[in-house]
Length: 141
Image 1 (cartoon, rainbow, N blue to C red):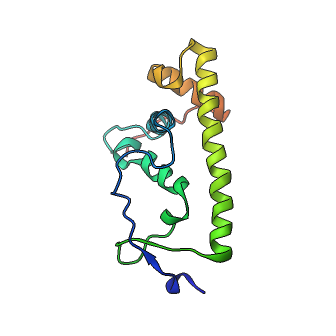
Image 2 (spheres, rainbow, N blue to C red):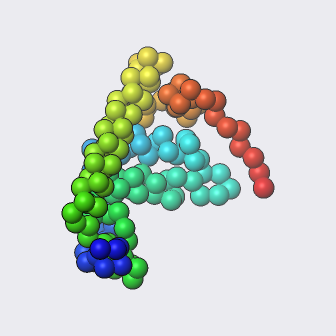
């Protein structure tokens, strides 16, 4: 059965403003990290785009994977499609949870505080350490 034939589930991502999957600490940490990766400048950044909310919903389960064409819900997956997505989501959940733990570990090594409590420049340094690459320089159009 193709996606066009899947049943629609009337779920809105607007139902809840806060975390569905993340803990409060994970939400705030991921939000802070994404805001350093895609900062707000003369264009909206990750905070304005609600990137953390998108990630949280993606990790919440298969009910938020494929939006229905009419915008009034999401496609309900079943069978092998759902099982495959559940495995992908499980792996991504572990990746994000381990990432928050690692950000906090690196922050504590650096300044004996959690990632959230670091100044922006130190958050950048922790993200550079974690990624193994220097932060790209901003450019103007």
